[in-house]
Image (cartoon, rainbow, N blue to C red; front, side, top):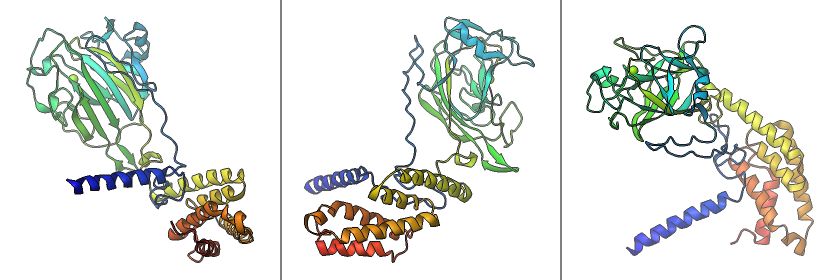
Length: 392
Ligand code: MG
C-alpha cells in the first residue's frame, strides 16, 4: 500500500515537474521539427486553437443550441427555407414545409438540397419518423442524409422494424451497417452527429480514402468507416474521388419524416490537402518550416539583447538559414566576451540568464542545429562550472 502511495506521489511529482518546465515558455524544450513535422513537440509558435463556445444538448421538447462557430442550415424558422431548394435543375423553391419548428418532407415533392455547398464537416442533424408507424422494412420512416449530395447516411424507422443491415438507420447505405441500433421510438427525435472526410485523390492516386463517423443518439455507430464510393441501392459501390464540395441533400422516400436543428462546422484541411497539422510530406514540411522561421526572424528583429539572440537562435530550429546562423554566432560571441568581463555581483546577477542561454545552445548542439564545437557554448559551460552554477 505504502509502495503504491509512493509511486503515485512520484508520478504526480513528475507530472507537476514537467508541467512546471513546460510553463517556463522555453522554445528549447521538446523534440525539434523533423522531416514530416514542421512544429517542435510542445511548440510555442504553433497557433492556439480557436475559441468556440459550446452549444447545449437537445431535449425531445426543444432543440439545443449549436456551438458558436456553427453554420446554421435549419433553426426551426420558416426563414431557414431560404437556405434550401428543390433538388432539381434550376433553383426552384422546395415544397417541403416548416411545421411546429420542423422541416418536414412532403411525399412526392422530391429531395431537398442546401444552396450552400461544402465538403469535410461536422454535421449535426435531428430527425423524427412519423409517430404512427406505417409500412415495413425500407418503407417505414425512410429518408436520408446525403453528404455532398452523394453518400447516404440512412434515415429509417428501425424501431422494432428489421431490414437488411446495410440499409439500417445510420448505415452508410449499401456499404456498412451501423454498429448498433440505438434508435428511440418513432415520433421521437433522433440525433445524428457526423464527421465526414471526403476521399482525396491526386493524379488518379488515393491520398486519403475518406471516412465517416456517426453518433446516433450519442452512441458511436460508424467509426472512421472508409468510403468505398458513395454507396447506393443494389449496386456495389467502388472507391473514387469526391468533389471538393457539394450540397447537403435530404431524401424524399415517400414518408413525412421531420428534421430540426441542422448545422455544420467545416473541418480544417488534412495534411494531404495542404493542412499544416499532422504528418506532412517532406516538401510541405520544408515549406512550412521556412514560413515559421521567417515569422520568428521577423519577431527577433524587433527584439533586443539576449531576447533577440535567443529568438534568432530559435528560428534555426525550423531553418538553418546561413545569414541567421552567422548572426547567432556573432551575437553569441559578443555576449560571451561581455559576460566574461563581469565580476562580483554583476556577474552573479547574470546567473539565470547565462544558464538559460547555455541551455539553449545545449539544445541546439544536441540536435545538431549548431555545430558540436560551437565555441560560445563551451565558454558558457566553462563559466557555469567555474562559478558553481551547475550545482543545485
Ligand atoms: Mg433513405
